[in-house]
Image (cartoon, rainbow, N blue to C red; front, side, top):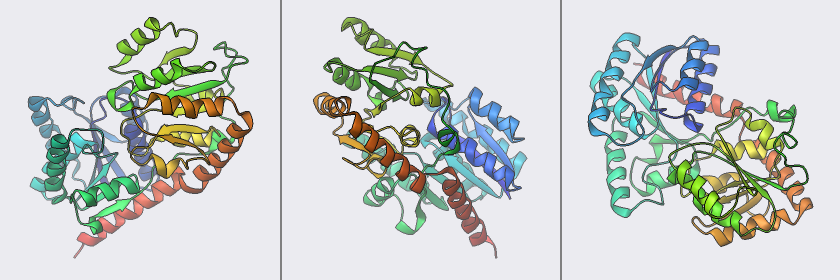
Length: 373
């Protein structure tokens, strides 16, 4: 089978990682694989190392820019004519629209994975209605829509995006082996964290992740050190908040890191303060690392974090509730241990990479077989 992946991927994150994992698996299964994406270095390098035919699309950008968004269609058409795929698998909202339009014109079957819907909670009602309407139109030319959480499937049904039979749920998953092998040596000494209880946030410093709510919560805690791993458009206001409130000793801004497993191995609690989510890879990684998780109750997060068992769930944009949950874990090492153990057991049972890859492969086969005479 010839499979063409299309993803915006203007920045590295969960969705590009997901695509890279799928491409590696499909190459090993003997399929020919192509990729259309923004020239994000990690994704491009990884794809080329796998022998994937790469079609860079410089017009794929994260913000809405109508002219560039329109121009992004042509590299997709060129790639499809050159690669002649049997199946196209689109990821992320913008690439999803463009790829499905191209597939409708060229009469190619297309699968779309929604890594969290653009019309999810946290946006204004008029934006949600507009975005859901666009998704409804795009769904008409989509063979199958993969949702990464039951929450997203239910949201799609609620907003009448597609009939239930067109929607499938395939939870994200990760390879547990690096975590079971130890995850790398901890960095506590290198980061000067000996004797500290360490809270860790990993994610883009961007509005959906709401890092400023997290800083407001941490500001009120009498102890604990927060590691912030990631970069993004909110980095300047985050840095300013840390300076203005004298949090330099309590908050360490580490930027982008390639050693996240070592950072998790040095941590005691994982925290996420998002306004909306799909099914965050970072939480699955934290669970595999045996960390209790404190997160906002958004998107598919409740499918990962069992409140009171593997961590705590709190409302979005509620610094006092977030601080209270963090304080509970800061004060109780035994509770941290129990929740961390329970989280790893759940991750190993439900959120492995092997399961995700096999379920996605079966979806491909269903779509392609369904088109054969």
